Length: 414
Image (cartoon, rainbow, N blue to C red; front, side, top):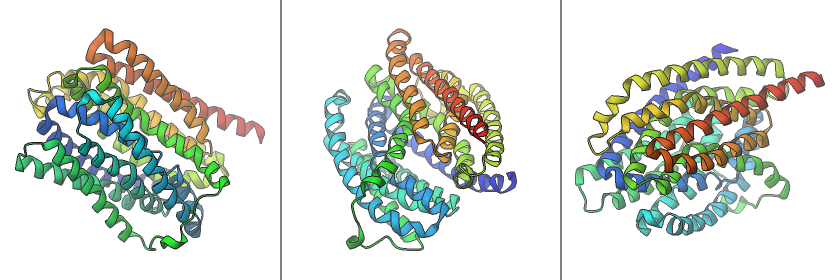
């Protein structure tokens, strides 16, 4: 059981190692290029776009992943309505994004052209890119799937490097359009990577009511799953001064990038859990226990390493990002909870319990809103990492409680 998953995890971790390098390079270039003030504003509005973008496919990319994992021929049934759903939902969410960004986050001072570029990239192009990624993952080509996800990130690194070298008058505007171009080029390459072309436009159709109901749980859980990784940056933009929000956003991106091996492990296990999760509970239970132990061990080691290495980030990001090392140390409190939450959410999805995942992640998002609003006015910058830690641990405990309860109730029923 462990050999194939471990080998797949190693292959996927290699790809995600490349992704980590790309994300780290982009983070350093963009953060130093914009400075904490503009980076805090950019991170806040970009996080809002990413959160709304999770709803663009309305969960149909997860349906595609699940169906292709079980029967590759189901691709032809799912794609015609997945493509149309993504374009319709993405367009509606794009309009909502512009409304929210110009009203609720107007104090960030982000230009409309930047918002348009980010919105198209995250609400239309990136969701479409999720479909080829889900198809490759369903076929067990996890590394290929992750390469497609890494591709726009690599192209954004190229865009950031170009803007850095050119020193334009408005680097944020130029980087935003490079961001959009990276997503467009990545989508084009992703469609070419498929062994079968997408259905012709004449074959697209609207989803049936039963198909929408089936996808709805995945749509909401996609939002709640991404929310804890993005909502904190938008909240920081609202609750902290812009410069402090930039320091927090950079620190949180560092933490998020270093949890990628946990994601690699879960991505490698998901196709097998989809197959066995509802038919062979004993085997899936053993696999989940192994994943839990590996995740907990890695996250504790990562938290300890980050605590020791935190002063190095003060040197990497420069004098304008004062207190980034201290902020990273506060964020280490969230690392084990964050890793266990990621695994618990993916496990519940493969066990056919998407609404359980939605439930515990909704509790976490609510707690993040409440605790951050309470902590930040009292504690300043340190309040955001503490609020995130509370939310992540609450989600991890609830998620694993649901998994244990599900396995016990299934065993009792048998």
